[in-house]
Image 1 (tube, one colour):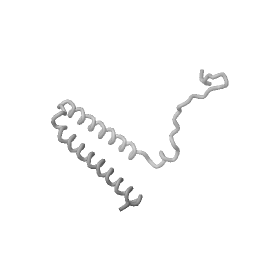
Image 2: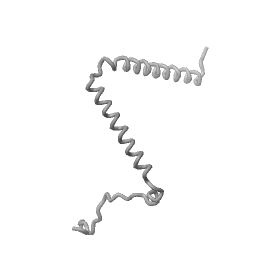
Image 3: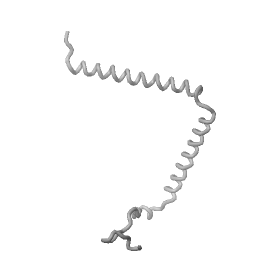
Image 4: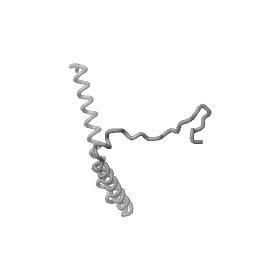
Length: 94
């Protein structure tokens, strides 16, 4: 009995996806189980500090965005990234 190409492809992709996602699930479960054993208190404190900093910075960004008025959105901000140069390669202010 022969199998057509589409059925073979579907079965092969299903097997590959099942193996990949099954392996990832086992890997995540094992990593979570071992985290309590290998993480030192210093590492846990550093992670808590990073999370607190990220939360604080996100709150600052949110406060800034909510403090803007609709007029602030009329003109985009132009950053002065490049100085103007004349034909001799010098800035006009020099």
